[in-house]
Length: 77
Image (cartoon, rainbow, N blue to C red; front, side, top):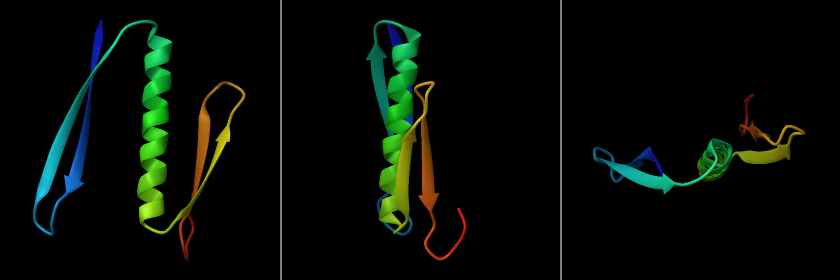
């Protein structure tokens, strides 16, 4: 069994931050864990970019990885 801790910081108010720890347990091939973490990071990046009004496109690459392009409104990414 492998454990992976994912840390996320959430803004609660102008001065308050809440740090959240997710502890995930994984069984199996390291490749599957890496794929899961990549998908998690990509989804989190897309959500945060869209919250800020940016457009996001995702392209699956031949090696199985993903390429995210974030178009920043009024500027260059």
